[in-house]
Length: 213
Length: 213
Image (cartoon, rainbow over all chains, first blue to last red; front, side):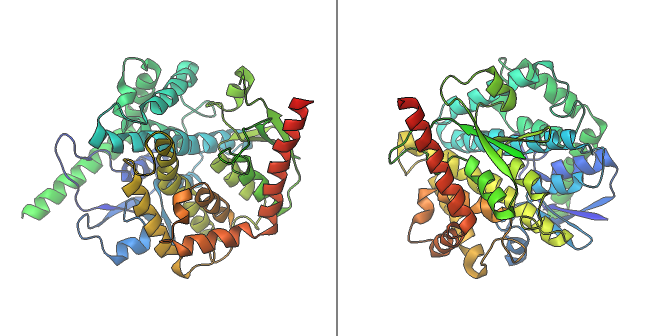
């Protein structure tokens, strides 16, 4: 049984992260591959030494599986991908393709989109990283011109990562990026995504009820 | 035989990237594990469709190995790590530890340090990401308090990634981070690093001679 840790609470409301907390990536992968998992919580407020011992930056998610501990959503996805051919092709060419696109989502797209989002909170959407983000999105728009999924000619763990990076990047919803939008819609229409998303939202609603009770 | 692609040329001088181009990470891994490799070049100027077909953002490095193609330095390192226990422990706990720290270097540290560097070119070292970068470096300073290497109690591929991220982050050289500085010095004292570094610098010097000839 795989245990996924997330927070007990995150702020709700229009700008809150419910439905966007990165444990969703792990839930989604487990749902795609029909892996048994449970979800446990660590406090959002007053993060203590136990949390930092498991996640050195005080974030979520992290997982445990038969004594094996993993933090970083990207590492957790690659760890889970070893468990099922549904997440990662077993032929070396397809596996390398899924690996490179998982890392590209993290290190070539999210490396720009998340700092852009952080800057946009204080400086607005036209900030010092906007040109770089737009360039990366334009490259991805071209790449997705003739692909249903990003790697290996099929759905893989790289799509979980890439689609979720796009979900978190409002600028990717601009009219200039119809291929990105269609790709994101394909990914989010998958039953495994819907289950993961609805379970995460329900998790935080239940946390509200527990706090108010 | 593994082929690593890098540029034929990058600018020299004090602020040029010679010694910092990310093919160094792949050279370093191959040197640590005594893997056979060669280095080929793609034009730095006038990057053409062939380049974008191999690296969708027009960057380097990328590699080829018996028909398997990989881009993204992080993906290349994880690919190479499969080839040698010297790069990645084979026990599941140690392997997960090396995996999570490789991804953390990419997605929790470089995701802040590279955008910070990009902003610092136009806005100086006190920019909208400085507080976030300092926070990440402070976490890493604490993590490195009692560790020689970052994962699994030994040198792994995660150290290649993490040490190179610190090499690229001048702010990590501040007096507040003695553990980071000592860690970086340990990593850069390794013969495999020295060889990779000197070979990269020599590669670009040779490129200058070819251009001027």
